[in-house]
Each structure stands twice: as structure tokens, then as C-alpha cells.
Length: 346
Image 1 (spheres, rainbow, N blue to C red):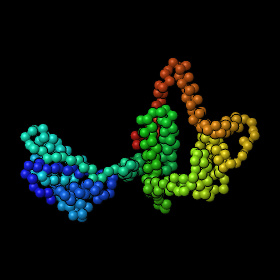
Image 2: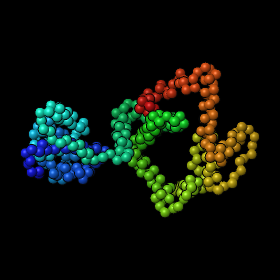
Image 3: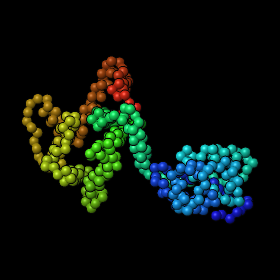
Image 4: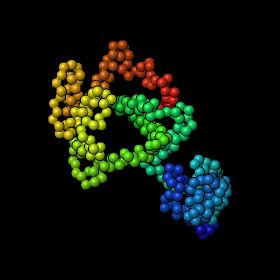
């Protein structure tokens, strides 16, 4: 404990912690302040940190101090640590501000000390918790299935592409969130499978293992120097993982036709296969040749066609006397098709 110094107004430490970090995992500065404090208080007796602090030998008083009591408790150079609740300590800090503004009181030093910090990605834990509650309590979300949600995953992916091509940063952030929601929603549903359940942690663990395995030049001793070599290595490692007998395996046949054609041509080229395009007549074969040409030139045929289609759309609107960027009357989403548009689509 601190030796009393009559003229020293002392110090109040407001210790904040993150609920996204396991209780008891505090910074070294926080532990030092807690062990050196003359008093440690927490207004919330059920605060998750309290049992761990007591286990570590810190005496924690349950209760809140008024601003006046806090100033008095610090007099003589004492240090009081207040373990902040989830709402913070507005009554205490507002009261201290009023006392300081009065000019009648010698105020103790007030220090805000983060005891634990959110790591990058910590807000994903909030999303998982929110999704868990929605799945349990929402009449619409609780009845959804993988099959019923599949169309929304496709729609959100297309809207993400549109945001990227529009260059709208706010829209991009929002659409990334909508795509992420689809992943978390499906993972939450998967937890309920009676025979083969898996969770969002299993999903994340699987993609982490895949990324590490397919990047031996980052996490291993492989050496690649060009993007082309990285792609070729990716295909080789993936083939070993999947034990596939053909480079065409795993190419989804239900994707847009131009993208499908370009993907097949790309797989063959990366594998070093010289496969002539099939001979035939008709528009389909001509489109296949165009897709192959686009892939050879490093052009995404889907993106190229969308750009041309947008230009044509603008030309049509110009012919109608309407601004190119004017929204269509039908709106961006079909709200009637989705009773919880704000939950899944927006």
C-alpha cells in the first residue's frame, strides 16, 4: 500500500476490460495497478473479472463510490482502482467532472487504463453471439435451412461484386458484412445437424489449415517468385489434397457460363495441358472462344461483359432522357421475397 502523503490528492484508475478477451487475461500494467492499489472496487458483483482478481490475491470491494467519496478515498496519495462495468462508470466520471469544474476541490489524478484489448477480428465474436440469439429467438431465422438460404448467398455475392465495381467504399463494407452474415448463419444452422454437426470454429479452422497448406512459400520452405507460380503451386497442392484425377473436378458447373468457360480454360492452361477448343458452329462455341481469349489475356470475361452491359444500360437511359445513375423504380431488393430483409439482405 502507498505511504500517506497529506498534500497528495492521490489517483483514481478506471480499469476497462474487453468482454471479448477471456477474464483474467490482463495487461502487466493492469496487474501492477491492481496489486499496488489501496482500494479496488467494482459496482457489479457479477463482473467476470472479479473471481479471477480475488484468486490472484486482489481484495475487491463490491459497490460504487460517489465522486465525493472517491476524492476522499484518494486523499493522502492513495490509489483507488475502479474496475469498470460494461456501461463504464458515467456517474463517477460525471461527478468528478462537476467537482473539478467547481474549483473548490483538489482533484486526484484520473487515469483510464485499458486492462485488456480487442485483438483484430474480435468483433467477429459479437457477430457469432448475435447470430446465436437470433437463431434461438427469431420466428423467421429459427426456421431457416441451408437450402432456403442458398439463394441469398448468391444474391449477396453478386451485390458484393457490384459494390466493388462501383468503387463505393461504404457499400463495399456493408456488402462484405452481408456475405459474412451468410457464412455465420449457415455455420449456426450446421450446429444443429443431428449426425454431422459443425460450428463456425470448425469452418474457420478448416480455412486456416487450407490457407497454411496452400501457401508453403509463406509458412514453409517453398520458393515462388511470380503470381503465376503461386497459382500453379496452389493447383498442385489442391490436387494433392483432393486426390483428384482431373483438373476439371471441383469446377462448379452452375456458375455463370462465361465464368465456367474461363475457369476450365484456366485450369487446363495452369496444368500445362494444350487442349484445342472443340470445333463447332453456333453462338455457344463463339462465346467459348471469346472466354478463352479473355482468359489468355488476363481479362475476366464476366466483368468485361458486365462493364459493357452497364455502358449499354447508360445509353438506354440516356435515350430515355434519364440520368445514368438514377435508381430504377423496382428498387434494389425484393423485400416481399424476404420477410427479414434487414436481417439477411441489408
